[in-house]
Structure formats: structure tokens, C-alpha cells
Image (cartoon, rainbow, N blue to C red):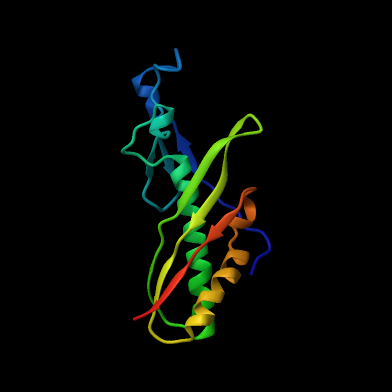
Length: 154
């Protein structure tokens, strides 16, 4: 595996068509994120920050990124350990507060619900710790990413 990976995207403020940043209340927070060869993501800020609730906001995308990274690491580990995962669902939750006079994430909780067909259930539970340690995104943030998994048999 290569030691260095690069990622590129394009972000366009689409809200500019609705007017300039003449005041905090006046401008649109809408944007479009593009990655070559993939469908665009229509985004905005969180409604608490005057954004469009029907669009993805950076806060939710961060929480989803942490959840997806954990899941992908976990599925890899289970496949390597002979554990057959037949279903996986998570309902991640993040918390932002003002800390050190800045709004920031202070915690994300992952609650994956895993169903396995074959394999050791105790091992399937334990692999969540290893998945957390291997998750590139969780290793890149400066707040705790906790997990409380549930593993059931099909």
C-alpha cells in the first residue's frame, strides 16, 4: 500500500446567485461539493447557522465520515477473521459546544448494530476496538470518537 494518499475536490459557493455577503443575515450558505467521477453533494450550513435544512451540512458530513470509516475498517477485519457480517447499521451522534471560546466537536458516539451469520460473536464485538484504532478519520480528529456496538446473530 502506498504511504501517501491525496484527495481532491472542488467546492463552489452556489449561494452567490442569491446575492453577496452584504450582511450576516443576507447571504445564502448553499454550496456544491464535487469530486471527479462522483455525484455532487448539495450542501449548506446547519440551520442553527442560517443554513438550508434540506441540504447536507459539514457537521453531519463529519459524523457520517467517522461512522463510514469505522464501518469499512470493521468489515475488513471481520472478513479477515472469518466473521460473516450480514447487516450493519449505525446511528452516529456528534456533540458540538463552545470550548476554549471556540465552537467545536467534543465527542462523537457510534452505535453500530451488527448482525453476523457465521463466526465468533465475542470476536465480532472485540473487533470494534481494532476498527477504531485503524480508522483514518478517527485518528485525524482531536476529540473522542466512542463506540457502543451491538452484535447479534442472524
